[in-house]
Length: 336
Image 1: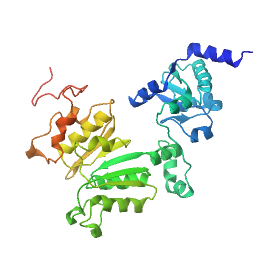
Image 2: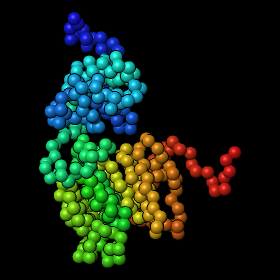
Image 3: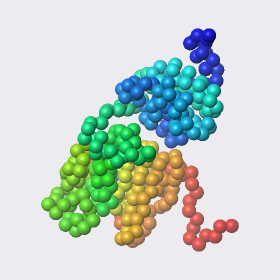
Image 4: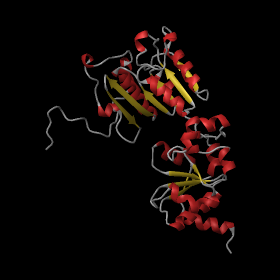
């Protein structure tokens, strides 16, 4: 019978290892890898690496098909110190999984490196009842709901687009919502901006919106930001959020938010509406074009609203602002 030392030596012959910084870089780049925490559930709840799935070592061979059905799927395993996960990775190799990596030093080294650690807090009885319909959805479930409760979303604009967005984010249980708007509620807003009421006319929109969100879902931590976004504050503000929702109403702000999200590596959910027409686009860094890639230059002022953020566009956008996509063809262009 082989000793543990011999088993680990055999596993290291076939399983590559990567350090915490390398794995973090792969995650940040949006690589479609499957990260699996093979520790026991109580260890996982005390702290884990986003976006890991917890499949404890004793169940790995039975449940791996649900996490990675394709044997070619890139998989990264980790445990507390890197030993259990090394043996687990060898087991997956033996099952035919081709692209399995072990996190060198495990969770312990990850945390010691100062990299972000998430913690699962058990939901209380009220939360279990409130989000019970989410638990029935395979795409959300209890794990997804806990992730929503840990999430931080910056919502730029508390108007026609921002109002329903804020309410749905709050209802879904997004844990932190940054609500940014420098305007006050006007009576003419009330036929479409459902975040506000008649009693709030004349009040800052972020104050009115904060009260409405907290009344809908007390789980949500609302951060009111009663200001307009500009080149001086945009990068400092968005750095604290996982995702940015741009509900602004002018092109200058849209380009500014796009440039900042690109530079900060943040996903930008962009929406716009005109009368009975609307659109929504998810602009994820390194996974497709950005807003400026799709629309390299703003339209002339006569064709759309302009804001006060325009002076910041050139300052944020480096001269070599890279786009992996060619510029759109000129009007009337016929492909050869």
